[in-house]
Length: 484
Image (tube, rainbow, N blue to C red; front, side, top):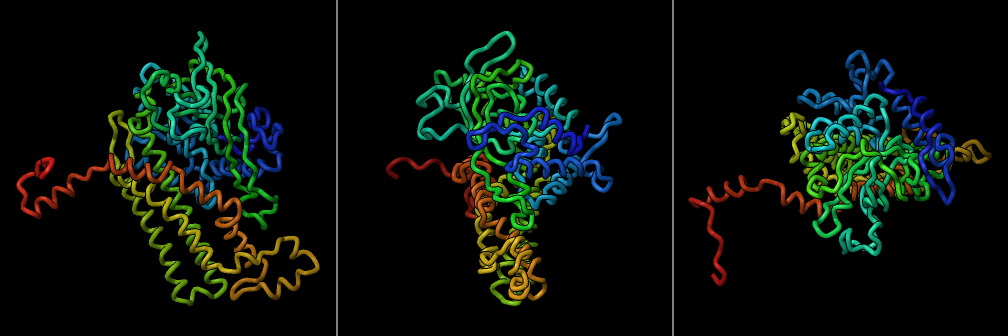
């Protein structure tokens, strides 16, 4: 059933993931200074499922039980709208700054379950696993790309065959895998999903890297090695985002990890690995959640910049109005992508309703280019106010009266004004904000490759045909002969 925040915390306390931070094992992430913020923020999201105000948006009822809305099978456009309303509610709760809410990968799992026949002999494994996640309302993370040892070489050409995650051996009980992957965000999840992420090329030995499975985050031999934290303090006044939403990113190491057969989804099938996301509809459903999240994030930036302009009286100036209007245009564009994605949804061959891919591709290719500009607008409107940021302790100390006098604004007393600008700092300029920018640049992969993929999959023929018709061509010209 839909779990509570306390149930999530207790599960994490009794079965802590294998997390390493600065050379030490994290014994209890629920109390660790680096991880406790995100743990309790995620717990608050789970608690929202039981709030009478939000219950019918965040959960659905089946056979007398309540389940997370993000696992509702999408069998109609109405189901898509119900799902996106739940995405938006959670995203708004964290200003769109939490990229690994459980609903993100739940969208993938739901698509896999509804298109389970794609997985052939492992179809029942997929169905059973998603049922397990649904009934226990588990939080999942995943690991993405191979380590950047030599990007010019294929997985089979690396210095060690088990730098990328590969199958070492098969037994009667399951398989053993070895290697590493980047990048696991939110290691405080219950489960790790190891799915295909980049295209695998055919070649001798390549089949051992064609694998997809799921394992608990405390599985023996599995290690999450965390980067340095962006959370530099506990104060939600001084660090309004990083103190609460530092999800952490990890190198994930598989030191001869055992995976039982019932948790394997793909094995030794390169074609299935390469086609899994698109053929099952998982690509469209994860992009659907992301587009809703980016809408929430853009709304938060618009609210932030508008309030900053009002607070210091800068919104009376034409150049500030222009910048805020620019953000409005970005937001309305993102809303348009979202609306069209649902309005033009169609069922795939498995009966799963999938949001329109063209609309989603437009959004996920545009937003990485918009995001740095959004940050720049915040910095330009905030100006030096983004730097003059005394802390909570300063207001409580002997210099507090000076701050109250000199840092007041046109509409706010000093404490609230500084608090607003501290939020702007954390959203754009702090370590947390810088990580958000990098995250947005590469969320769906290399932007150039994404454009190349869009070029190859987008149907340009109707638009070319219109030009041919306008020019009066009776048919498409033949290929030019060499030397013409």
